[in-house]
Length: 372
Image (cartoon, rainbow, N blue to C red):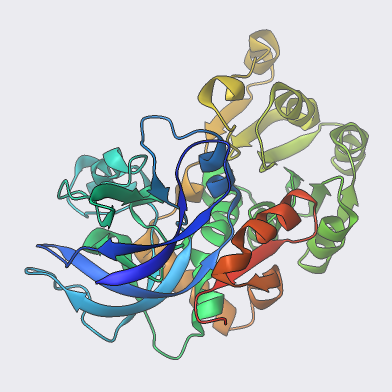
């Protein structure tokens, strides 16, 4: 079938709205009419670099929609089901899924190119095969997904709210709860208070942190973080260092979570300076290019203070367990989702949305596929 989508033809360009073809679902595949897509900063990394992948590519990986058709062998969803996309597939059978670490599922090996686990590219543009970013392509009005990337949700849940639990909410929340292992009484510092960092704040609060310090130069983001539970906010990591020591009565932060939009040596150094004895530094942020994300570590200090460095992919979450759970928390009034959406955009306004993000005007922008 034909559909409209936002495509990056090459690095360092803006999204172009095109008409292209979506393939029919094959074995284990699902055709989804997308309703909403979050404007995640990971798609901005895609604009600058796609390591191991290829261009052109359909952007977007955080989304929600309705199943319109399924291929042979699909049992998890059926036409009419409401789904949230998982930018990391979870097969349930590989070594990592079987060990409860489905965010590291072996089926995620081709997410950079957008090729589905079957080896299929889901889109064609002028007879050229195209992938969808993270095997999703949420910036298309219709997309072809692996069954392993479709999380069925209850039909009464608003799809705009649901889109956020495809990436930013579990990534941030899990960075605190799972990757960081925040415990009651902890002092936590979250460096970067965008769509992921705001949810790291919520996760730290849920885990029982006594103090949650949010760090961001943008006043709007600091104010929002306070509204979802941050006990203190500051503009710079330098300010957070003294505050973390004061709040912890001299030891430093128990957990520091780095959720800046672009990882850098400076961000790493600022975060490390907040970390106390026995503390855990959680690296959730990415750089535009892998080599730009290389950071140095003071090994001597890490040794004598027994500090841990923990990478965090999707907040160490299991999409088929945690996406429904997070939506249930929202239903019960224990997790803020609605106010995360700062502004809504049409497909044609996508580039404007990312300019607003870069200017610090949004916590989370949301693309509405049905918006005229």
